[in-house]
Image 1 (cartoon, rainbow, N blue to C red):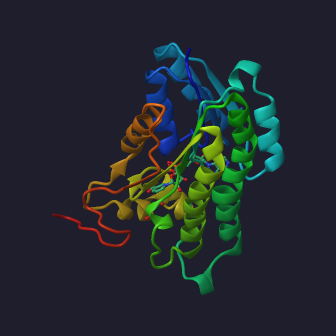
Image 2 (tube, rainbow, N blue to C red; image 1 turned 90 degrees about the vertical axis):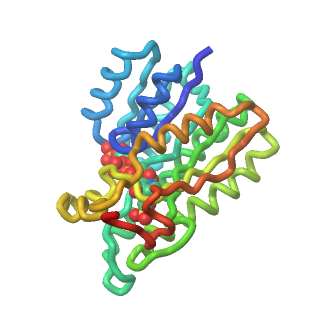
Length: 253
Ligand code: NDP
Ligand code: 8X3
């Protein structure tokens, strides 16, 4: 029987690459995000190349009401979710704490922490009931260390780090796996979003080095998800070769 995977934030970057790779490996998919037209396009692309089913759930993860309605709307056979990839997230702004933007802070906290919690609260009980499941949280190197001007984004990803450890304990009696994958620099729409649409500024982040690509993270997700039943990978920190820590990078060599 095919496995069902729910990927939050599948309209771009890591989530989209993961959807494409999991579908090629036989997973039925539940894809979520705010940009409906992108979800619909991805569904058509996937169903034209793989024999899997795709359901799109178009909602803003910052609204618990929207999350609940979307998950409740799933057909019964899709309520058996084998894999939850808590991927939707973002950074907004890069500034000192004293010059921070309250709206940006709230967006990051509401998306990266509260959104992840809303979705997990709906899906973990289904996994417990079915006595199997795997939750993969996309954390960040920013959840392992802090860097100048990263303050609130780093705090949200430290929260994902803590929640991943803590969920693993809570899920232990039920045989449900919990993994955190914490990437360093991945070239997606992430930096364009961080700089409020300033693509030129975003491109500079990746200038002179080879970053990770969304497909690199998708491959790790697939590997982690396909381990034998008795193996749980707890935590993976992955950077490009050109990155040793959040701030130690080599460019142009
Ligand atoms: P992208 O900007 O390319 O993708 C982000 C995804 O999150 C989009 O699909 C977006 O969908 C979704 N999303 C954002 N806000 C919401 C919301 N309110 N409701 C629903 N979905 C939302 O970035 P990445 O692929 O790089 O980011 C994926 C994850 O990886 C994030 O958690 C990020 O923090 C993490 N990460 C990224 C790194 C990087 O360098 N790129 C490094 C380490 C971690 P839509 O806008 O359509 O709603
Ligand atoms: C994204 C990586 O270093 O920009 O989480 O915070 S970083």
